[in-house]
Image (cartoon, rainbow, N blue to C red; front, side, top):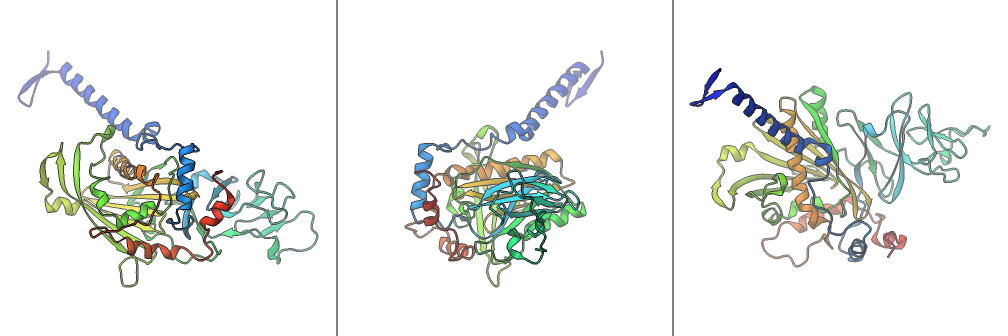
Amino acid sequence: MVVLEVIGREWTLVQVAAYAALAYVVYKVVEWYFTCPEVYGRHGFKQNLYEENSYKRRQLDKLRAESGEFPPPYPNGWYKIAESAEVPKGKVVTVSALGREFVVFRGKEDGVAGVIDAFCPHLGTHLGHGGQVVGNNIQCPYHLWEFNSDGENKNIPYCKKDMSGSKRVNVKKFTTYESPELGSIFFWYHCEDKEPEWELHPGLSEIEKDVKSGKMRRVSANRWSDMMMHVFEASQNSADYFHFSTVHQYLPMPFNLKLVKADHIISTIYGAEGTEVTKESMMIRERLDRLRVFGWNIFTLPSFIKDSIITYVHIQGPNNVVFKVDTILGSFRAHYAMLPLEPFRQKATIVMYADRKIPFFVARLLHWWIEETVGQDRQVWEHKKHVAPRNLVVGDGPFAQYGKWIEQFYTEKSYSWNQFRARDSLEW
């Protein structure tokens, strides 16, 4: 019988094989926990206390809409409307968001994706219900009018007059940007239909550049269950330093174990003239200071560790959030995007990117970590009555500065709470 001496002990080949097999099984279980879509997509967040369409949820949303404390529900800016993979050639996708109806489609020949208003200018037929792609145009199912990705009418089969110069037969188009590197389709929304007033998130441009050069790769993507909150909740965290010591006092752990407490050091820069951040953006800088295991063994992290793991949260608009984490292993990026389906309902997605040299499993682990961190806020976000805090005291964060920052995303014609209540959308 072959005997091996390992770490001062004799082992048989059978024992070595058994322990190796056990270690492999443990590894696969842990890998499955963090990467299996069925578990990965659902376990991270607590179930809503007020279920969708329940009496409690309708009552809460009524109180929130009537409070007068929230900013209008649909800010102007860039929104991610779909994953590129969701809109293959010849596909028509209907999107209900921002109090409007949109269709996203892709030409069969040129492969160009377009975002246009869903209603045909002829008699108001919804292009997303029965409409199909013909060549590079979307065709209305009612009278076969055709529109290209720029909303221009390209064909009215029974009309003998040349209508190519007439704007009244065109459908409204939205400025669209698709990034092959990000795998996402974005469009510009403005309540007064103005053209883009700023470029898409500079953090996303950096990711595009790194993916295109081969430095980074797209690791994973996930759509959460819809978040029942106002779109500004996430960005307001920038002014709420103290909540990091309550909601985020424990670092995310598997099975929601409350094992390690952490002290955070937070700073925020709101974009303005003379700052390093553009006016429509903000930057949150966060690093860990002290860790407490099981509530004891308090120790301060050495400076070289604190300085080597710093998280930057770059927010634009406020619905596009880019997490930037640079470590000794390499760089990680995550894009957390929100699209308001209703005033208190957000379609939320997250896509993770990482340096190619970083093991895939490690990158997925950090993706899980970021999702869990966002999930720690969710119970509060989904049940708050107001955004603007009342009765501020000494020691609160820069909420006034935050309030001034968000004003730039609205105009006098922004969709108002009075309009929302008039629609009786929540059926109260």
